Image (cartoon, rainbow, N blue to C red; front, side, top):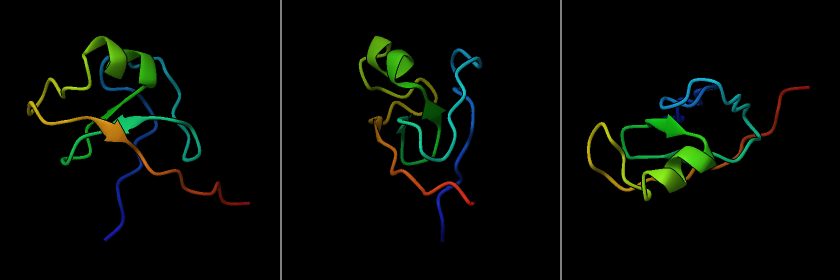
Length: 61
């Protein structure tokens, strides 16, 4: 089962997060840009879970 690779930050909605961009996710795959995750002290506002580094996926050619 693959991760859902969301392309926008759920907090600021302006950050573009392509597959190979740095981002943070929780276990429910809530997705945030790095500045927003740092501002939230790496805690997901939706579930209270830990935000961790999202694995990067190669961009299809």
